[in-house]
Length: 539
Figure 1 (tube, helix red, strand yellow):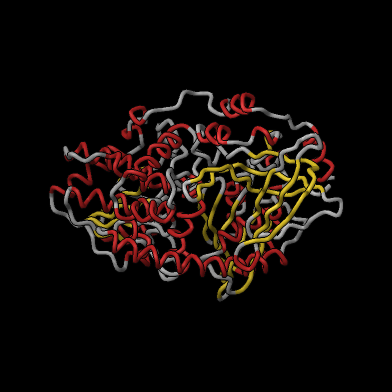
Figure 2: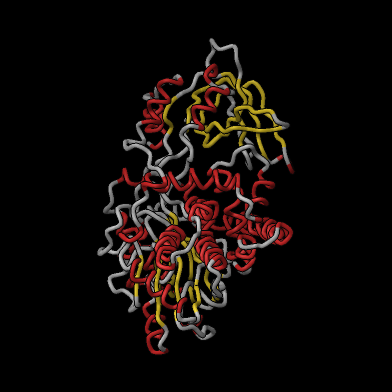
């Protein structure tokens, strides 16, 4: 049935030229693109003016301020932006990013044991830190929470909570990441202290956070990423210079950040300690930044190996009848379960939850697909969990090992009430491109709709029943595929497609149906269109 539906849908796919493609992509943006000057006033964020005044007062009074971040890219970027800002005041700031393995997530009673401060500011965490807030109150520490994750029904007792998802918040655009909340708050602090700091100079780090945290690239996010990538290309920040040198391109795209840079920054917190990434982003010299980036490269290689091994094991444990995948195993590395969940989503086209069990306690991550709000599904079954938090597309959770089966059954029961359309991947093919349309002009057209990412995915095109002329493998251990084919019998021009990390199974009839995306390839100063296979279909 599934293949039949795909066939029906593919029969309706239009043949496009550049003019019709432009119209299709233009429809994604109903409103005129915002300028930086049109970003809504940070004072509209609930408690933000109050928080900025409190931080300014603490600086004037010489109080000790401690920042508590998070170990993912968003949390590390938030922390790096705050450190850079405080360096420019200048004012001493103690910055702590919890260790995933010894501290757990965010500001916590355990972490507070090693904090001695008058004021604690959280970035990208804290909205569920009810117990930690109570500890701060008992110790006379004032607490300012800045976060973007979905609040629970009960909020921590803090001096100020700055979070666009609070019901009391009137900020006009909710879908911003933790680094954006921190950056907007710093804009108010700049005014409070009457500082001459250009807030645009942080956009190189800020755009990395927005992309890595899979924020929808519309409205102000689109503006900030677009401008941030420009700042990244011109910035003299040591970490930005290293990123530019590593990517070695005339222009950097959001996908370069998503697939090349974000995984490396993430790898430190996943496998060892996020301080390695923080030291990279805040390095004072290119030499120091380079040393940290080399460590991140090494950690990322190790992460890939563990991820591949765990993904293979996880696939074997999946119950194919489940709507929501829930898999668990003893001693899976806690740092890779989130990526493995994403791989399962890709493989099965279903939301996935992957749990690592250690001493009877299961901790893990969830990833979603389409319009399924995985956080809400988890919340509906929160009575079976010891903790949870997150947002629509990704979440973290913990529970006792003995409750895993009950949770799997319960969350699938909750999911059965959803509309089946919610589970459809939003990455649908938009049309068929004749081979003659694939050229430099097409690259320029596609580039005009950058940045691509969440809510503005790079368009996928369809090749249907194309004649395979030649196939090759290439790369390390011949793990990548290259296929030359002719789309239509009447076409003279052949095209070449690449699929990374997979050896293609060639159908006996030598015909291929697949979706693919078109990207700019730069090699030896030569620019060409590269066609990368997204999925192959057999029906």
